[in-house]
Length: 350
Ligand code: AMP
Ligand code: MG
Image 1 (cartoon, rainbow, N blue to C red):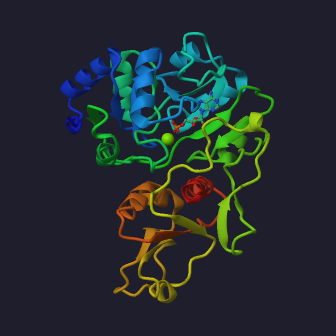
Image 2: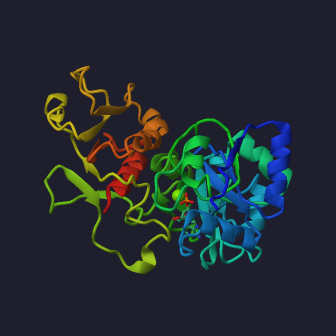
């Protein structure tokens, strides 16, 4: 018999107490964070964390991010160095994840057997309440079936995992909308940006006082085999020991085939392909009101606004109506543009 659909809990004091008790006894709760919704479990309880992998269909080789309420609690799971303390002081609580040597209390399942752990102090007030009430660090990957588009609302979580989990906490739409920036600081002399996010490379390097190594396989590159304007993730494989675990070339992907293009054709040409959805960064200037296949991420042209709508837009275009989606490369190389292009390139990867 099918499991009943998970209930979305409003953030009342009673519900917060109830859900923190679920976490403390080894259960799963989908929680809001400022980046995307997460599927949380007690990070020090291996059996609880195993449920995350089962519910998401996530391979055990993909390690989880551990969410803690303070730098003091982060110190209990990870071994800090001065560079990590600098970044924590500058950006926590916030959307920055640090990869550091792990302490023995962290079960192997959380780190996919690695001797490092990814840790962050989130900013979302409701998650902070849960962390305080349950008293445990919480492992939480995005609350979606593995590989699909990350959820930015409680409804998105229910649409994807509603029959595999029981508890969802509603914290409204995610304020940032894309996953955290991840920095590898295992070797503080050679920091590496593993995943771009809303905290930019420039902000991090400014605090660190040095430049960071490039992310591996996350920066999309022009696919020279395809048309000159079509983009695809790097196909050359770096040495496997250099690849960040879990950073798969295909991720965040709608079922409808998505192509990422440097520039989309203008609205008049796009309107001649009525079965394809065209996803512009900004409203094209001459979009005819009658065209039903033209969409845009933001009216403002600010990448931060596009980040808040990207995943909801991709989901809305993934209901089987379109033969394909053509998305436009986000202009610029600063702020949130690299993070958005990283996610779009992975969504486009075959
Ligand atoms: P998410 O998919 O948002 O849950 O983020 C988890 C990602 O963090 C993983 O897919 C890895 O890319 C990264 N990560 C987590 N733990 C580690 C670790 N110990 N070393 C390197 N990267 C990690
Ligand atoms: Mg994820």
